[in-house]
Image 1 (tube, helix red, strand yellow):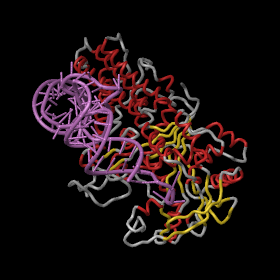
Image 2: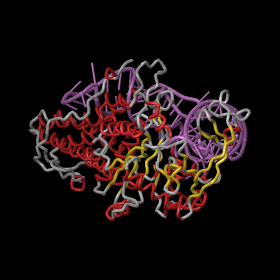
Image 3: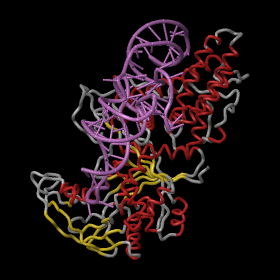
Image 4: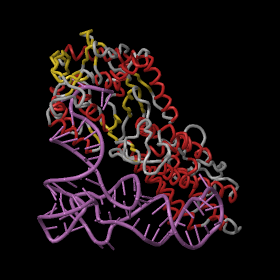
Length: 534
RNA sequence: GGGCCCGUAGCUCAGUUGGUUAGAGCAGGGAACUCAUAAUUCCUUGGUCCCAGGUUCGAGUCCUGGCGGGCCUACCA
C-alpha cells in the first residue's frame, strides 16, 4: 500500500517550559519519520510549533513584568533554536498566537456554537483560592476533611459556582469508540488503545472550554461571549489544522488543507494521550472533519534513577558526579548527528527508557564510530591503496558475496516498508546487521592480504567492490537519521547532485571506475574524557 | 480510590497463539588479526525472568494476591 502523501506533526510545545530532551525526542522522531517518506519520494508535510496561551504563560509574564506576547516570542525562539541545532527540517512552525491560528480558532468555535455543540452551564466545584484552581470532587474527597489536594495542611477549599461554556464531548463518545474499534482512528502502540477505551468506558463528560477573563485573559476570546477566552485544548489542538489552511478565506489555502488532511501521524508523549485520543477526535467529529489516521504515542527518556529528565535537576546520584545529560549538553558533546542517532534508537515508541552519558556514548561509538564510520574508513583506505581509489568490478558472486548483498538489500527493504510499518527499529537493525556482515566478510576474505600479492590483488579489489556497494546502500538507508554523514558518504562513493533513491537503491549500480573519495571520518569516536565532569 | 501499563544478564532491551538446556547488543575476561576511528573477528564470564501462591504434562509467557515504578483520572500543559 503506497501512500500518496504523508503529514506528520509533533505536539506544539508549551512555552512555559525550556526545551528539554522530550521535545528533542519528539522533534527528531517526527523529522526521521518525515525523512523516510521524503527519501521515498512521498510528498511530505512536517509541522511543529509552540503553544502559547494559558495561565502559566500569563503568570510567568506577569512575574517578569513583561507582556505575555514578549515572553512567548522569547520562549518560542528557544524551541526554534533547539530544532535548528538538531538539524530538524520541519516544513512549518506554527504558533498559537499567530493570527492565522487565532482567526481559525475563532471560526471553529463559532461553528460549534452555531450548531449547538457549545452550551453555557454552571460549574460547581471545590476552588482553592491559594492555588487559583478548581479541584474535582474526587480529588478533594481523597484528602482528610476535604482540603486542597495540593496543600492539605495549609489550604482549604470552598464550594464555588462559575458559569462556563462546555463542548458536548459526551455526544460523540460512541462514534469515537466505534472509530477506534474499527481501526479508522488508530492509537499506537496497542496498549494506548486499551487505555483510551478504558477511559471511554468510564463515561465521558462534556469538556469545559472557557475561562472567565477575570481569571485568565491570555487566550482567544470566545466569538459569542467576549467575557471569556477559549481555554487550552480547543485552541491548542486546532493548530494541526489551522497551520495547513483549515477554514481559511483563501481557496488555495483551503485546498492545501484538503490535500493534507487527515493527518497521517500525530506524534505525542504519553502524558497527553487523552487530549489527543479523546478531546481532539470528538472535536473533529463535531466539526464534521475526518479523524487522524493514527496517533503514535511515545514514552519518556528518564535519567538513570528513573526521574523525568527535564530541565536541570541539580541532584546527581549513584556516585555519578557528572552533570545530567540535558539536550544542550548532549549536543555539545556528541553533535547533532550522533544525538539524532541516539534519540532515534533510544526506545521503541511506547515505553520509557533510562539513559545516561555512558549509554549514549556506548551506543554512538558502537553503531556509528566502530560500525558505519570505521567500515567506511577502512574500505576507502583500502580502495585507495589497492585499486587507485577507483571503484573496481564486482566479479562473480559467490555465496559470501550474495550474503552481503542480501544484507544490504534487507536494509533497503526495511526503508521501503517504512511508510507502512513506521518501524525504525527494523531499519536500524537491518543496518547493524549489514555492517556486521561487511565486517565479517572482510575478516574472512582478508583483502588487505590479497592486495599484497600481484596475483591476488584483483580478487582483493572484487572483495572491496562488494563491500563498498553494500556500504553504499546502508548509507542510503540511514540518510533520514544522519543526513550529513550519509551525504558525505554518498559523495565519497561518487554520488553527485540530489539524492535519487529510486535510482540509487539497487545493488550493483555503482559504475566501475567511479572515483572514490578520501576516507570521510564520518563519526568521530567519543572518548570518556569528552563527557563533562562536575 | 478507579483505569491502563511496566518490572527478563552490570546496562539498554528481544522473547511470537504457554513447549526443547531463556536470547541480542553494549560493557567485562581471553585469543586472533593488523586494512581501519585501540577498530574488527572468534571464544568466553554473567540471569531464583520482582515476590508468593494457583492452573497445566509443561509458565518469562495464563490466573489470583502482594511489592516497586510510570501515565491518566477531564479545567497544568
